[in-house]
Amino acid sequence: MLHANADDRASVPDEASPSAEPAFIDVLMANADRLYGYCVRLAGDPHDAEDLVQESLLRAVRNQAGLRDPSRLKPWLFSIATNCWRDLGRTRGRQVPTTPLAEGGENDDFSLFQTLAIEDPFPYSDELHLDFLRLFRDEDVQAVFLQMTPAFRLPIILTVVHGFSCKEAANILDIPLGTLLSRLHRGRKQLEHGMWDYAVRNGLVTTAGEDDQ
Amino acid sequence: MIDCREAVRRMWAYLEESLEAKHFQEFETHLDTCQRCCGELEFNQRMRQMVAERETPPPMPADLRSRLEELLATGPDAPEAKA
Image 1 (tube, rainbow over the protein chains, first blue to last red):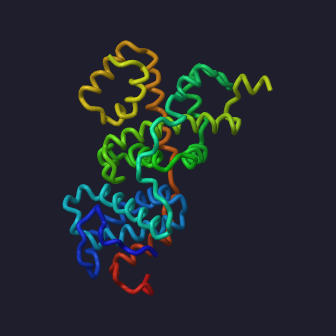
Image 2 (image 1 turned 180 degrees about the vertical axis):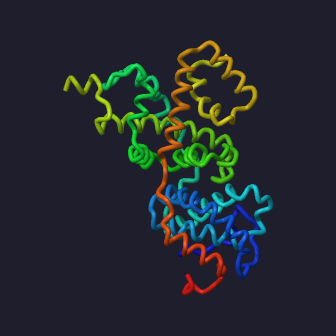
Image 3 (image 1 turned 45 degrees about the vertical axis):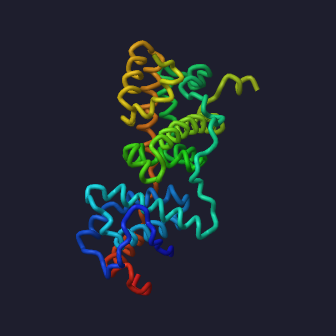
């Protein structure tokens, strides 16, 4: 099990309380599924995710006083989980990519929309772009996400999958809003490129170039 | 007036409703005159929708849920043996 870190940024450290009030536990557990889902994506491993979600909930109970506005519970919990994940990385000597990545990636100029229009891959369709998206099953989308750089994947997961605003996602990841927006953009480009490569590599589409080979 | 490259750069922030008022206005003005970017905007909207629906992490195992409920009820400082 992880060990709680008293300098938790998301909350004001409190003296350890003997136990949480039942109502607070109910509220925490009502968010536990979502939190576990985020932890699986953070840790990339179900076993580590179990440790993460457990430690996150324990920290939440210890620092209940740090939750000044109960309506902010969900982003507060996700912040705690992000901090726990960083702490886990430190205890294991893993480098957590918290600094901005180099500007100008290979994907920045890639456009899936444009690539589909130019390549016009088989199967042909009147709704080319939308049909391309329909080719992807759950496991295909998840496989593409696993290939992405975590620093670019997490902003998409927080905003698109969990429905946080960009400002909330920036707070959860403890980065400036501008950095979040930049990573969201680069994450989208990485996702677009990843989806195209995956579709070609796994035979979801066939391009003219492949027909010639 | 912004060009297509800049419009594409702002697209997800627009969909997230995170653009500043000035950038938002410039983006919408661009859309008024650019059919291509309108198409790409719709594509991006569908792509986001697809990700939201299909990037579903596995559900929490039932035994983990029971363990957590018990752990929280007994308190974080309770002996591990109770968990």
